[in-house]
Length: 252
Length: 242
Image (cartoon, rainbow over all chains, first blue to last red; front, side, top):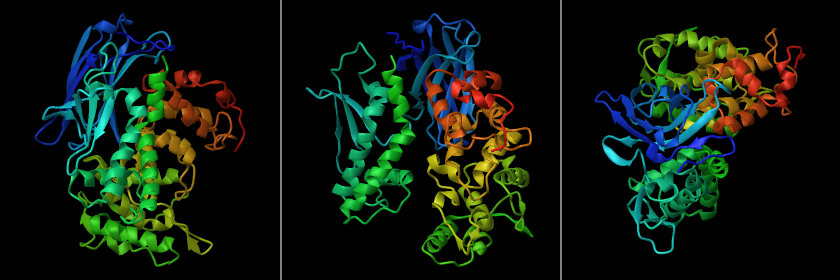
């Protein structure tokens, strides 16, 4: 189902783009895949199809073809990324003639890693299971990565079903900050772990430390840890750009 | 005074961090520059890079130009943009430039101004790395973001430098130079303020285009045409000094 908004931009669903990131023996990353625009056309024949990759200070973009080609296949070296990075991707269809530079189509997507079928670098596993009356829930177990469970019985007429639901602007903007807060509350305030811990909980604390570089308060100072966590959550929301994602979802 | 650059290792970074905390608490020992030469706290950098420790920088523009020049032997061979050890060592060696003694004391800001953090979202706060990156990408058009003193972090400029999609957009910076810089190299009046059409406002306006325009695909002239009415005053060439 094509989705339009008042700007005329078409939001491509995840199934329009297939991306796989591969790491070579020397650590260099490359991305290959395909973009299938046929179901979302027609497009101006000369509209440019652009792939952008970014993570942290690294950003790279490529023109991968014209929108006149129903299915574009490509492979590119990611020269600005290290082998241990997990870039995010965007596909843009950009007008080249009238109103040059205008976004005609957009898809935000995570690539598969060739050596792992989970989303790259994920500390949050996503699965689909029957959940009765809940849309989703977060499962927390000691010494395991948290698991986001999506109800397998969600209607399939929209983007909001299956594992892909967790990647939609709606879900990311409304839910992910609270997931972050819940997981880190569990490890910091309930289990009272520290960043040296080797378990998945320690990984989450180190991730939170990368967002709030102030020293972590001692484990017996619950109020200080709670305040520390709020700063980390705010920074997580800023870094995840939830406001833009909310606009992306809400502008229809 | 010539010095062969070495990179701070984890022990050196920790010692630097401790020094910053001491000064922040009111103590005033001299900067421990020996951390940048001791094998226990620093590592060799190859090929050799020779820097002038007596060098001073009147503005961030000179910081960018100098490091683009002296670091050429290494940036042409490997990526140093995210090299924590090198950038933190440079901050320590030029500590009087990034944290000068003013009225008898140093005002030490957050560690991220001096120590390049591994947290990717704060790399633009480093006081020496950002001018270097901007100069490498934009050359003279970087001056819009580099007019201040080396020890001053500008929140307005941060709107441009904390997002890679903006920071790497060559044509956008070309447009900004045309919009905000006078022929004599000074900022137009109001450019650094908070009012309509200012640099601070520009960062927010550009974000709004994320969902409608691909600014990387546009020329400087097309970007300028796109900007809303509040920027009209800056589009004329006759704005006076700030």
